Image (cartoon, rainbow, N blue to C red):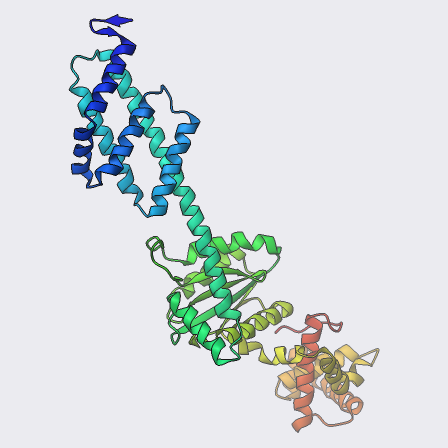
Amino acid sequence: MTGANGSVEEMREELFALLRAQKGPIVEVAVADTGIRAERLAWGFDQVLDLVSDRAPSAERLAQWRDRGMALAREGAPSEKVYDAYLSLNWAIWEAVMHAEHIERAVILDFADRLLRGMDDVIAAISEGYVHVELELATAHTERRRAVLEDLLTAPRATPADRARIRLRAERNGLAVGDPYRLVVIHPEGPEEHEVGPLVDELERRVRVPQPNHHGKPGIRLPVVLEWRGHILVFSRASWSGERRLRDSLVAVLGEHFVAVDSGPVEGIEPLAERLAEVEYSATVAEALGRWGWLDDPGELALETTFLLDEQLLRQLIDRELGPLLADPRMGEELVETLAVYLGSRQNVREAARRLHLAPRTVAYRLERIETLLGHDLDGEAAARVGAALVALNVSRRVGITEGPVEPL
């Protein structure tokens, strides 16, 4: 195909030569529009013309644009400003093309098509570069946050040097040493350790209020939701107002069978490690006992926790205080049940009989049998010791140390 001014290819080359000759003024138009330095836009101008010279951008050229996006992202250049720069440059180039009246319309339209399609590909490639760096930074931020929190929540505080290092690391990461904090340890029922990660992501998505991007703002934003030794940990400031949102999210994500133990306010960074150990152990005990749901205070299970600290002593307590009853092959469990209900009824025979659906005379007979087997009356300190042994027996059966029926907690 030929025209008055030569072949289409010749005219296209003429158009490119014209644009290169006007590089300075075209770049200045984009500089005035965006405020971006001329040297940056001059590089972009050359890249745009190279892009339009091909019918479709090659994979290699798009990779260069993607690398450019990654470099700009690492420099901290806002993506919207980068897009604005290329769009402004694009428009300035097109304005210059429109003034080339001697170029045939078919060449102009072909240039316009390549320019529009090419810039779509460029913006997509630059965006891909930004996304890649975002993921890199997010991963690095997560790993760094994890390492800092691991240190703050578990490192020993045995010496002044230890405590000074913890305080310094907290302050460097935006956590005031003396502020009150809060820990919630969550044990979901069922998931394998490798399945906890997605649950953590979903909980964090639900409980965290969106905030501006973290880049350029070092430090840890609270609350955080972490995968913690096969379970889940929420670390927040004591004043955090999202507890109700967390509780609702736990039910929505985990169902009804989970244990969540709240530490309550922890005054300062230094006591966090000790309190976390207490809360973790309480959660383990609650899970073993099947005590599902939210516990506002680790001390709610202090008695059960005490019994489980030493299995041998637990067995000795049960054997010493209840052994004669449990040894009765015919009525042992009935006697234990009657004793538990009687003590739970404040040693009122009629009330115990009502709860057991038995005649008061039957309950009185069983109590006589119990006192005979135990070798003492059910009053004073003896009743208190037997009551503690009954709790110990129930706990031991719930966690599988001993066999037998269990009572509701």
